Image 1 (cartoon, rainbow, N blue to C red):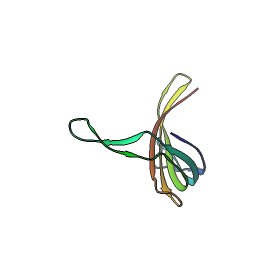
Image 2 (cartoon, rainbow, N blue to C red):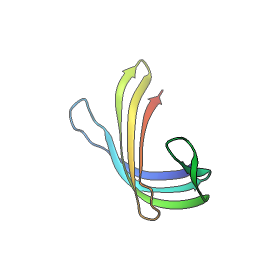
Image 3 (cartoon, rainbow, N blue to C red):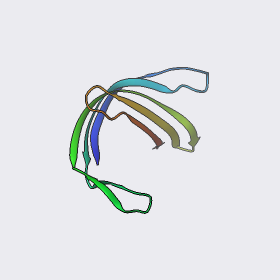
Image 4 (cartoon, helix red, strand yellow):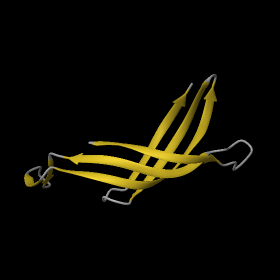
Length: 101
């Protein structure tokens, strides 16, 4: 389970006349909880259990958002973000679809 927040500064970069994505970067904070972890063999038998643990991570993030289509008053877009850990060990890649009205 992961919970967290990201604060980023974005700049609208004009690549072509019609395509102007938002590109930015900032800091991310995350709290990860790992539980009920185990390793099974090829036949599905339990080989090893791993202890529960939590990890707090501070990351440097880069992200971009762009509009893909406009349908009436609705806008559909794509958001991609990558986080490199400063503390902790988990780098993160997230991809999301945006729907704006």
